[in-house]
Length: 485
Image 1 (cartoon, rainbow, N blue to C red):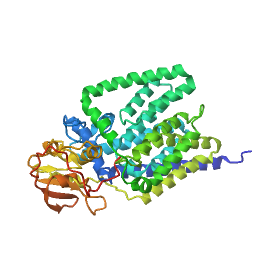
Image 2 (image 1 turned 180 degrees about the vertical axis):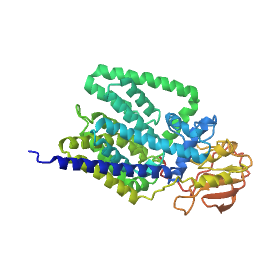
Image 3 (image 1 turned 90 degrees about the horizontal axis):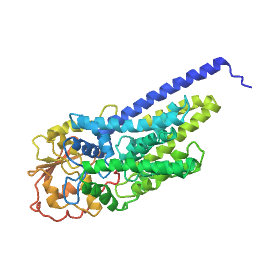
Image 4 (image 1 turned 30 degrees about the vertical axis):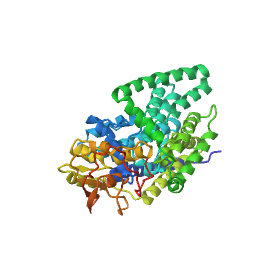
């Protein structure tokens, strides 16, 4: 017998909405702080180089290159994220481009989380589930643009459309995910297997045909837009040649908790991966993506950012669990809202967060780039805006060197200022050094160096062997960052 008085129910409902409002406010602050940190976060150079790949398209530069021609960029992913970032190219400054890219990056995550929680959650508990998912997202990857975020948004939209019986839309989303990152074929595979279990072989074959037709159409479009040889070299040859990481510290120590969490979530997905289970499609999707995500984590330059695809199962599971609890136990609505608010308080108080967009370094870069004759090896956005030129980025040079396809000195210098005078690196987040892969330091023959406030400026003198057609010499003693995404 329910002895709860109407006044008590009204009080619980009011408290629930108050807690939800507090949690939502904390969520808005959390996302704002992540957006503010985007331009100069610990991996801000990756944001710069990846945004530059898209902005370069506005100026007619292709981010893909062949074995022997083209500027070298960090971009070894599919073309879809380049067009997702397309609005960044409308910004009038490099800082503005990064601010737009940061908003798009967070928008992808929020879109996928909200779509999952609305579809799988209860009428009142979906907000709590969405906020918990956003607070649980690792801040390191939340303020760093990666192709996994496009895969997450497209994969989540595809799952929702599939369960709503919009098969063509679901197939389109699966193809967009695949053309975002080459390892994301698990999104489409999960859809086919789910249909095989629910509708039998004819339904699965029809959907396979949809995927093939839409995939072929997009492949033709991208092959017409970009040179086939450059797509093959940049998307398959270079990433395929990257070795396994030579140092497991980043994966097993720094990223160890995230690796364990990803494995635990894979176990949870396996337990819910059965016919008739509401989470069957999210579970299949994550289980098919997990092995290659783990492999990506342990490749040269990999990181636990590859496990962001775990939210394709985690967000629906949280939404469904809270929704069922709320339907059976009314107090669960209040408990979920309080948990979301407490989680938000914890994240905001334990992270070092910015409350204003951190773009001061790009204001300084305007002065450093005046007059040209300068190369920003890890910040190509600067010269894209100051000169309209797209010079090599050092991460792309490092990828090709590590994969066994080093760039020759002649090719290196062919796409740098012919009268190069300065090489400029951004200061490391710790403030104790610079972010560098060591290639520009070695190849430009620097003869002097000085510190700016936020940049490290090296006066350089091109070596006499700049026209040497031989590959760049093997890196010795250079710092190899193991936190690429």
